[in-house]
Structure formats: C-alpha cells, structure tokens
Image 1 (tube, rainbow, N blue to C red):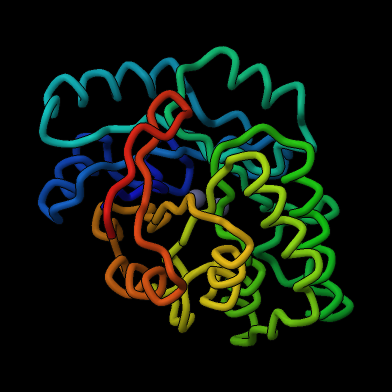
Image 2: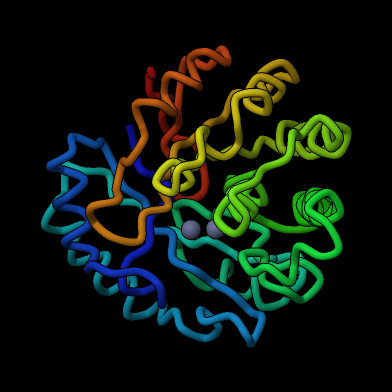
Length: 264
Ligand SMILES: [Zn+2]
Ligand SMILES: [Zn+2]
C-alpha cells in the first residue's frame, strides 16, 4: 500500500524530515509515500504562509535520488478550503509539479473545524454545515482526492467524545460522492481518527459502501501522520473495511494522474 497522506516538517504541525519519513515507510514495507503538506490561506491558521515549496521540492528531489527504485515518492499538498481561495490555490497548482493534490475542508464559516466554538449551536447543525461546505468544495475546487470525507466526526469525537449517525446527511454525501465519480476523482480512507480512539476511519464503512454502490472505484489510504511513527497506522483495518465495502484496488498517482492500480 501507499501512505497517500502524510505531513513532514514542511507543515507547522509536522515533525520529521522527508528522509526520516521515507525510511520509516520502507521499514513498514509500504510501496510508496506521498508528502502532502498543508496549504492554508485563512490568516488565523498556523499553516498560513508556512509552506516553502522551493525548499520542499529541493528536499524531495534529494530523497527521490536516494530511494530511486525502492520506494514511490509522491510530491503532494493538502489544500485546506481551496474553494475559498481559488486564485491562490490555482497559482500554487500551476507553479509546482505535484503528483497528488488532496482537497480538504478544515474551516467552517471562518472558524477552525477542530475547535469547540464551531460546534454551536449543536453538533447536528455543524455536521449539516460541514457536509454542505464539502459539497461546495467538491463542486468548485481543483484537486485529485477528497481528504477525510467525514472529518467532522473525528473533530466532534476529539472535542466531545461524541459522533452523530450520518443518515441525516446522506443526500448531501451522495451528491458529493457522485461529483467525485463523475469527475474521475478519488476518495481517501483516512486512518488518523483510529489513533484517537475513533472506532472507524474517515469515512466510515457506510460511506465507503455508498461510494462503491454509486460506482466509485478510486480509493487511496492515508494515515495523515504528522510523525514518522504514525505512518501506515491502522492500514490493516482500513484495508479490511475497503474489502468489506467491495473494493479490490487502490491507486498510485503520478503528476496528478492514476498510473497504477494496486491489488488490495
Ligand atoms: Zn486534513
Ligand atoms: Zn492532513
């Protein structure tokens, strides 16, 4: 498998050099790793103006030269709310040769999704706004893979040890999945919540089943690891979940195109 969602010291909350992450990936027996650093444009975000892509690509090319042939090393970025900053996002994607671009909703109505004030007046209302925002992003923004589709569950779990059943939001989620499928984009199974005690990855089995039923095939796995030791965490469980939902393959991206289908 490939860990398609990781953060290094090029992200403000990440630790570890690209070499350390690549060597950990090799030790774990992964076939590849994507370094998908944070790009955020809300000035209050700690990742705002943090990523130095010239330095990032210089380090990445050096690691690639060392590990040529033994590990697929993907350049990447995780765009936070790219639909809110289309000019900035487009300029970044035009300028740099990314292999994989993850699109994520991290901010809701100008508030950070991982903080308690965002969850007023109720969890229900916030989930509803989150899935509306996600649909908006999938409709508007340029990216390859949708990151952590129901991260609102991870955040509400982190903050309140509570998650809501997604039944009430399935109409919006279906529209989001359909748009991904129609556009030939992929879905990420993000295992970071498992580290925090969430019983299922993001998205959960019900959403994976729905994606499959609607015709979705493009699936990647991401630990969202911010430390070398977090790489590949929960991949065994995530793989089993994907198999249970009817998936048989994961994919490898290069230059923002799928170049390989890997059997699960
Ligand atoms: Zn994210
Ligand atoms: Zn991330």
